[in-house]
Amino acid sequence: MIRNAPPYAASMLESLRGLGYAPATALADLIDNSIAANATEVSIHFEWSANASWIRITDNGFGMDDAALEKGMRLGARDPRQERQSNDLGRFGLGLKTASFSQARRLTVASRKKGEALACLRWDLDLIGQETGAEWPLHEGPATGSEHLFDPIGQMECGTIVVLEKLDRIITEGFAASDMIELIDQIEIHLAMTFHRLIEGVQPDLRLLINGRPIKPWDPFLLGHPGKALESPEYRILHTTGVTAQCHVLPHRDMLKPFESEIAAGPGGWTQQEGFYVYRNKRLLLAGGWLSLGEGGKPWPRDEAHRLARIRLDIPNSADADWKINVLKSTASPPVRLRSQLQRLATETRETARRVFAHRGHITPASGARTNAVAEAWQVKRSAQGTSYRIARDHDLLASILDRSGPLKPDILALLRLIEETVPVQRIWLDTAEDKETPRTGFAGATDNEVMETLSSLFEALVRFRGLSPDEARERLGRTPPFDRHLDLVSALEVKDTQ
Figure (cartoon, rainbow, N blue to C red):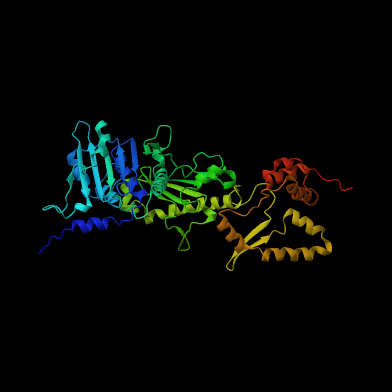
């Protein structure tokens, strides 16, 4: 015995409103439909009129005839298991309806296909259950009083207009015109990030406008910036079809102009924007995060030390099921068979980003050694008991001082041990996290005289204690951070006359 148990229209539609769309993600979903219709221009218009406010999305895509529009207005219009065209950004056949209902109670779509009559259909949640014999009433034409909102389509050979009215999820109690302006700014930022690869360039694939103003793309990778420590080739991920990755390490903030640093930080700030950027057909699905990858069974957190690491990951729409793309297009999880490859790429990128962050933009070889440079003053030692930081006793300047210290040598060694045991690690980490910046080191902000005091002492140690020639000592110091940023001072070094 089989029973037919259709859902109650009103209950189901009200439930779908709670999927979790924000205004920005809802509009991004609607733009996806325009892109799938081969639109080259999408214009979004916000009209503030208190409770009568509305939003209109107009595109110049190929449009729909009446039959296609009716199909598109149905919930679950397409089987998500069906194969899609390679440029299709949809999957579940729900985006137009669920994205619209998440913000508004009335959705009206007017569309014209080239050479066809205008088609216009409307959902109104307030009318569900009020029409006799129609549990799912789909109305023809715009609502009375809203006809003027569709005037632009009268001048279009083809295209589609989507109008959202009764914006009860946006225009709530206390919401004012100033709040609408702020909301528009937030939406613009999100769209600039989500569609940046489609709207960037001299001849972009898509022109995107808000209230007549073009949206400028936000490039999370600062492509081509001369200060970047890493901009890898594009890697093809094995055991997949069409999955590629490109690793990026952004410049340290010291190497960016103030406006560049503010832009590069992104909508969520430096830490929130680190990690993988997952794209499908150049459309951003996931911005940041480490896809639950990590070490020792623990996922990597987003932290300050790795905030410069960003990895572009492109997947085809045929991989949606494998990557567990959800209805909101806001989550992605890599297949198990690919995790080792992504882990390796992420580990290498994170290590490079950490070195750039710690050295304020100076990158050293992966081995940690610098050819023909003075040894590091600090040594990091890791053991089962934890990590410790020790001053290198064989550092050229320190070794020279200890050699000449005579009876003071035990006191100097005791002082070094005291410094090592009282490094304010927790305070440094706290200040770094709160200030969103590493503490000032590397003679940042110091005068030339201050730099020269230390530089000349180290130069003397290399010449008199290590036996290097002045030219060899200058060459070595010129390769040693932070003095490699003061090459003019290095070239001016001369051996002091001790007589």
